[in-house]
Image 1: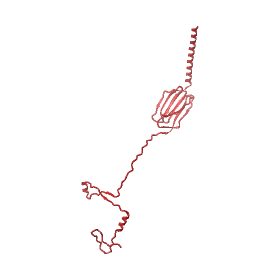
Image 2: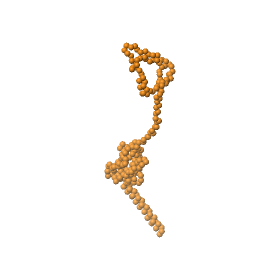
Image 3: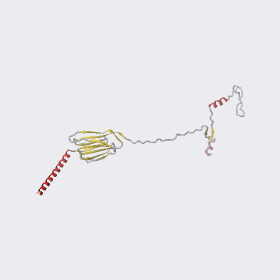
Image 4: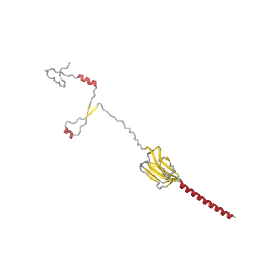
Length: 237
């Protein structure tokens, strides 16, 4: 009696496990039938434009991450249906694009922005271009406000003020030799320091007033010079 009861319980548990497996298989098949598929994507560096095609009924979600700057696009209820997972770009706004199955039922597209690019306050323009019963074409475009350039600051040079010293009492004058032929063969002569005395305007006026101009009458002989070099003449009265 006990043996028959054990056989009955074992057979019932076997049937229950079989039913559970069937139900799980049906759920997975139904989920695969309901999940959309990312059929393909393409990025144009000249237009800074990402295009991807998904089945109807799926709306992408996007957000922004920093350090480095990244635009993340999540496709809910979507399975990855393409083999192209990563693409690098040498120039432009976008440096790299990565596509992966982030979690079950969520496909993630990551656009890594190039260094120095500043995005605007609304960094992403996402719109649906083609609505088709089989597949919808979506376009995502990063919006930039400018570029960040490195500035090199030059330290100011504190140069001391130039000092110009003037000697108002003495001036050095170079006197060339009288004979040009001798100057070529003889060593250069030492400079001769000739003191130049400065006179004031009052002294110049006094000396000018002391000069006496000689007056010679018509028919009179020319005046004679003395041994000191002065002219004997008739003074102007």
